[in-house]
Amino acid sequence: MQAWFASEANIAFVSAQARDAWRERMQMLRDAIELKKPKRVPVVPTGGLFAARYGGLTAHDAYYDYAKVEKAWLQLNADFDHDAVFSTFGSVFPGALYDILDLKLVSWPGHGTDDDEQFQYNEREWMKADEYDLLINDPSDYWQRLYLPRIFGALEPWALLPRFTNMVEPPVSGDMFFPFSTPPVQHMLQTLLEAGRASAQWLAACATTDGKVVATGKPFFIGGFSKAPYDIIGDTLRGTRGIMLDKFRQPEKLLEAMERLVPLAIDWGRSGADISGLPVVMLPLHKGADGFLSDADFREFYWPTLKAVLLGLINEGIVPWLFAEGGYNTRLAAIHDPDIPAGHMVWQFDATDMKEAKRHLGGYQCIAGNVPGSLLIAGTAEGVDQYVKQLVADAAGDGGFLLTPGIVVDEAKPECIKSMIDAGKKYGAAI
Image (cartoon, rainbow, N blue to C red):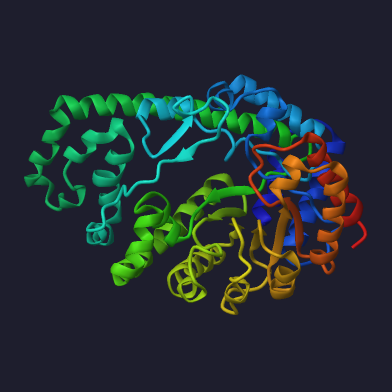
C-alpha cells in the first residue's frame, strides 16, 4: 500500500484537480480494503469488452488494433465517472501473439469464434491422467517440454530439447545443445523472437492507454495475477472433466500436485506485484463455485492450497483480490478462516447472496460485488438504481465494501452502467 501511494511521484497528472481526485479515490479504496468506512462506497469497474463495444469496436478490433483500443478505452474512461481505471489489461488480448505462436488452448475472435465474440477455452485434457508424477517431480520441465508444446503449435519443437536440470556437469554436457542445431528448433527460436516483438507492442499499448487514464485521476491497482492450485490443474491442464475424475480415481496425486503448485502460485502473484509496484493480485476462482464441488470436497481439495497461496501473498505485503465467479453461498463458512488475518484481502462476489456474505465476512475481509450481468445487459437504469440501493443497504453499512459488477463486463447497456455508478455514489455516500 505504501508503494502504491508513493507512485504519485511518477504520475504526470493532467491537472491539480486530477491529482486531488486520484488521492481521494486512493484513500477510499484503501479504507474499504482495510475495513474502514470510506468517504463513500468506491465504485470499481471490471474489465471486459464493454469499452470496445461502447466505442464501436468489435472484439477482433480489440485484439488487433491498438490505436482503436486506445481511442475507445480513453473515451469510456472519460464518459463514466467510476473510481478506478477501466483497464486494457485483462480486457485486450494480444491476437498477433496468438497468431505467431499458433495458440491451441483457446479460440479467439476470427480464430474459432466470431469477430465480435470473446475468447473461449478449448476444453481438453492437455495434461494426461498418467502425468501427475512428471508434474510433481519437476513442474518447470513439465511445462516446457510437455505442456507448452501441446498448447502452442509453434513450440512443438521444444519437446525435442533436453531436460536442462541434467546439466549438472557442464564439461560433459556438450551433447545437450545438439537439438539447437536442428531446423525445427532453430525455426522455433526465430518464431520466439517474433513473438517477443508482438508481446512488447501489446504491453506498450496497454500500459500507455492505462497510464493516460491514471493521469486523469483514476487509480490502477491490479499489480499481478495468480490462481488457486485446483484451478491451475482444472482449467487448462486436466480440464473440468479430467480433474473431477481425478478427484475420485487418484485423489492423492491430485492433492500432492496442488501442494507442489502452491509456491509457484505465490511467486506468480508476487513477481507481478514486484514489477508493477501495485498492491493487489487478482485471483479469478473458477471451479470452487457452488455445484462444482460438495462442501466437503471444497474443504479438502480446493480451500487448503488456495489458503496457502493467500497466506503466502499476504506475507509479502500483497492484497489478494478473489473474484468468486458463480455462487459461493455454500462456501461462506469455510472461507471465513481464522488463520487468515483480517483486513488483508477482497472477496468479489458474482451470484452470492450479499447479505449473507456480509454476515459471514463483515468485519473480517472486504467484500465487493455484485450487480448482475443480466441486469446490466437486459435491465433498465431504474432497475439498476434500485438494485444498488438495496445492495448498499445490505453490504456497506459499516464499511469494507466495494461496489462492482458481478461479472466481467463484455456486454451491457451504457445507461445501466452509468446508473450503477450514479447509484453507488448516491447511496454509498449515506452509509
